[in-house]
Amino acid sequence: MTRAPRVFFDAILHPHRSLGRRGFRVLMGVVILANLLIAGIFVASGAWPVVPFCGLDVLILWLAFRVNYRSARLYERVRLTDTDLTVQRVAWKAPEKRWTFQPYWLRVSMDDPPRHESQVTLTSHGQSVVVGSFLSPDERAEFAKALNGALVAWRRAPCPPEPAL
Image (cartoon, rainbow, N blue to C red; front, top):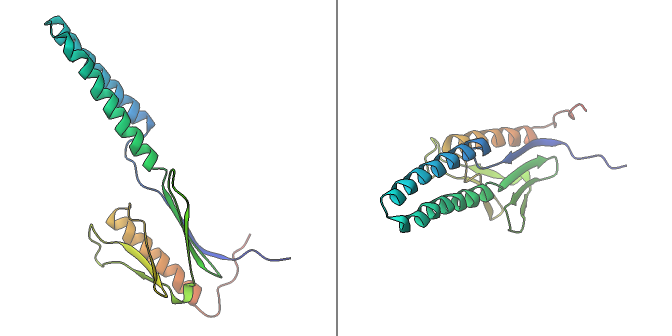
């Protein structure tokens, strides 16, 4: 019987979207009502050819949000076990990408203090990957600190006791 590897760190990173479904519905309702009011004013003044353009901006706004919500399906999973560190990136309509590192040699780097353009970079044996580029600078710094802490715990001898089930 093989035992499951111990997990020292497991994080799933998602892009933040500040407008949820309910907020989207409210926003679209307000935009539609405003467009209907504007279209009514133009029709009343005899400028009826403007009406299709009022619907066009609603359609463009809806399409923009649809694309935005699809891109929010992206996620990255960073998992440190007693054998390796794995980074898995899953994006909508794109093949899954996976990187595996040996944790003993892994280096986590990020600017301190974090700036807007700062990135969390995992590097080992000439292989690098940027993780969490969609996070805010403070979130990236917090993530890098947590991952570094997990790597310190992983490298500590003797290994910490196995987690209780």
